[in-house]
Image (cartoon, rainbow, N blue to C red; front, side):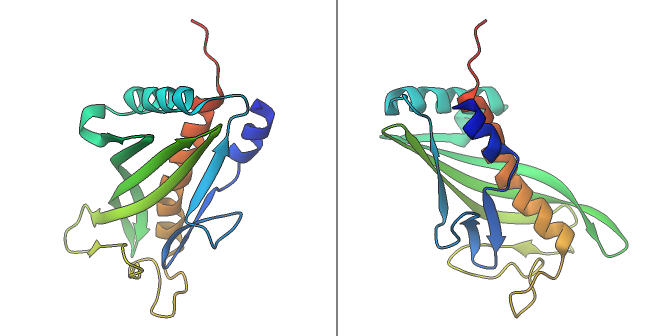
Length: 171
C-alpha cells in the first residue's frame, strides 16, 4: 500500500486550468480518489480529521464536518515572480474530503486569491471564470510562475494528506 501511494506522491495529482483544478490522470474530473486498501470509512474519517488537527494552527477555524465529509477552508501564501520583482499571493482554498468504503475523494477549489500588494489584483475562481493574472484571454498560461505556485498549493496539500494517511506511526 505504501509503495503504491508513494508513487502518487511524487507526481501532480491536480492540474490547474482556466476552469479550475482537474485531475491530472483524467482532466474530465474535478476530483481525485485515494484508495487505502483494508481501511474503513470511519477509520479514514478519523485519520483525515487527525491530519487537519495536526496540520493547521487553528483547526476549529478551518474545519467543518457534514456526515462523511470534512471541509477545510485554508489559506497559503506563495511568493511569485511578478514584473521585475516578487510578491506574495494569498491563496484561499477549500478542500473537501469524502470517505466511502476504502476510498477518499479529494476535491480542491480556489475560493479567492489576493496579492499582498493591493494594487496588483484580487482574483476569483468560481463558476468557470478565468484567472486573469495566470491565463490570457485565450486560456493560455500567461504567467508560468504564478500558475506553478498556485497549482503547487493543491498538490502540496494532497501530497501531505496522502503521506499522513499512509504512514503508520507507533509512538
